[in-house]
Length: 312
Ligand code: ADP
Ligand code: MG
Image (cartoon, rainbow, N blue to C red; front, side, top):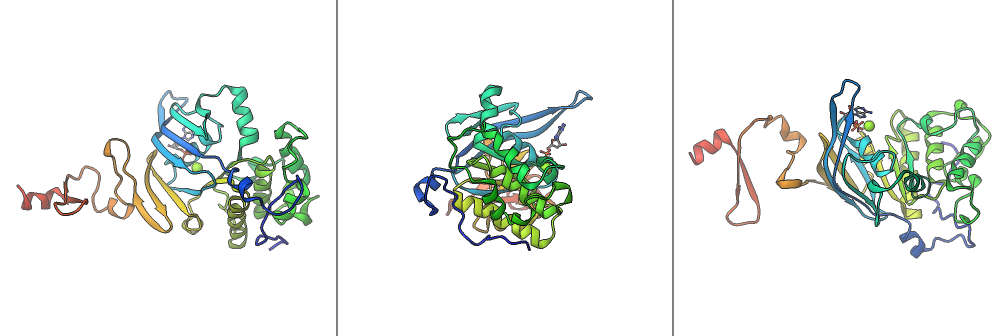
């Protein structure tokens, strides 16, 4: 692995000392709130594809969350809505008190350049291929408007150190490995000092060492800078490193994992998704009876064929 101090606390502080200021760090992360978010894509054939069917979700300031779920369930769409890259067709999205789903284009551009750092799927989509690592970082920092009052921003050299690319600073993106590109894309995303970091499949197509380095970096950005971190992944090992997982199914949130335990989430109007391992057991159309257990606050779900025997 290239030289990198992934275990060292990272607290870029351009205003003086090098020690992390806990109060400053606590204020860094933004709270994300989705209320009834729906998203449609209109295709050329004139058909609407419903990508998100009503997302209610709160991600606390400084929380680190992994979005999971099968291909096509809406993970990337939700990420682009949180980053202000697209607006939802319906519903509301707040970053702290700012309702980004209602902002005009100018204000939204400001949100994208200052509040949020997004790494799109496929590292090279986030980078200038013919430019060097350092040039990519300098370019990413222009997003802040090139203002001198952002002295809190980490310097390109500092970021290159943190992501273990100090030796590649003058290398062009084209000549870098997949892992190096992904780490550079992450460095560029945090170069503007965002309070929310969004990354779509940042570890896909990487070998084990590169994957571990990228995962460590994501957590480090969250813990050392207090940034809220939301990552899309299909790798269970990657998701397991996150304190919270959100599993999407068919444009809805189906389940959540907290500290290793899985929970089904009750949605609007009492909608619940069966856990994945039971979906084959009870195919769509199966009739079930749901009753409250007399003794406890629990529910008992019985399949129709057996329910028939018990209570005709
Ligand atoms: P995921 O990231 O979970 O694989 P996506 O958010 O990419 O899911 O896609 C959700 C649904 O929206 C899918 O059915 C997909 O085909 C559709 N979709 C995504 N992007 C577009 C688009 N630009 N135009 C039309 N349909 C799209
Ligand atoms: Mg996707």
